[in-house]
Amino acid sequence: MPLRRNRRQYEQLTDFDRGRIIGLREAGWSNRRIGRPLGRSDMVVARCWQQWITEGRVYRRGGSGRPRNTNDREDRAIRRVAPSAPTTSLASIQRHLTPSRHPVPSRETIRRRLTEVGLRSRRPLRRVPLTPHHRQCRLDFCRPRATWSVTDWRRVIFSDESRFSLSADDHRTRVWRRTGQRSDPAFIVERHTAISQGVAVWGAISWDTR
Image (cartoon, rainbow, N blue to C red; front, side, top):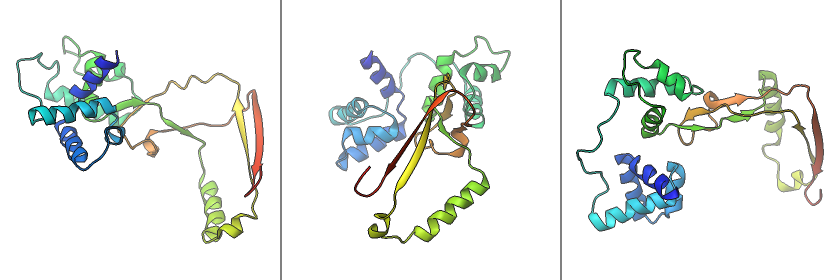
């Protein structure tokens, strides 16, 4: 299974990504350091580099392989739906395609078209919504302390309280985004704190003690 997954990831690399991998490897970067921002394993990077060493090329040869199941117009429609509605599902994207299309592109085909442009299904970042008043209070707190030294901070005790909810939360919402867009507000799901069963944990730390 890992070999099949690595082979699929390697075949999904764009020509730009392949050239980027070769350039970074020649600059002395490790396979893992290169693969992390690309969302690829170090084995995929190693395979690309090995092809460059043995064959002197990294681009795929043209051949008479299986033809694409979608045309350029459908590819553009697929790539337009996901960024405009990041939480949409593959089934919803399927319904956005031309109704007269037969056969309808499979969900795996749609997933591959999105992967080709760097869009992958990921869990969204969750955060508590902040009002303008909350943001202003945080700025008012931080600005006077921006120039504090270590000596100043040693006299401060930091405390925090976390509440762990015991109610069910499946967290099944996913978003289509590119690598590095995790903190983009368009891909964040706000979580509201509501009254439910839970456990509250409080703790405090200072410079040299807990």
